[in-house]
Each structure stands twice: as structure tokens, then as C-alpha cells.
Image 1: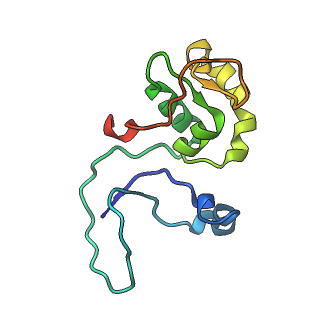
Image 2: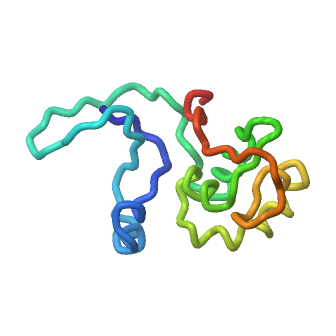
Length: 129
């Protein structure tokens, strides 16, 4: 069973897959139960269970940052993964975070940082939506 929403990481399956597919990527989904889907399987479109995420990667990053629990931080690589964007976007995070303001900027850190706050892995994010 799949739940559609605008997030995912094709490049986790194969490096360069997102670029190769370009705009032909089709529907993105959140897997909520494992299994194999094969040609000929009956499918059913479920009602919308979660709100769709923005197509704008910056808005998705802000959505993730808003969900970081108090007293925690998320590292750039995990932020990119949870927001459904390629890890190459991590180099744009410092500039984006500066524009979003100190509250958001304090929630995301590079992998090598002296910040000792616990790292949030994104768990529970979709439970809140």
C-alpha cells in the first residue's frame, strides 16, 4: 500500500536516477507497507491522508525544520534526505538558513560541528501531518 506525497529520493535507489528521469518521474509515494508490486496487480487510489508537500525544495526544508523537536538539531545530509532533495543541495543550506532566520538556522547543522545537541533523524515527521 502506498501513500502519495511529494517527497522521495530516487538517487537512493541509483545514483543519477532523478536527473536521468527529469520531468518523467511520475508519481512519488511514501511506502507505508513493504511488498512487491508487479505488472497486472490491482491498485487503488486512496483518499489523501497527508497534505501534499510543496514542489519548492526550500518550503520542504522549512517544513522539516519546523518539525525538529525542541532541544534537537538535524544535520544537513539528513535534512536533505527527509525533505526529499539531493544531497548536493546541502551546500545551499547555509545561505537558505540565513534567510530563514536564527530560529530555523539553529535547527540545522553540518555533519562536522561542535554542537552537542541530540540529532533528530526525522522520525515521527509524517505522524504529525
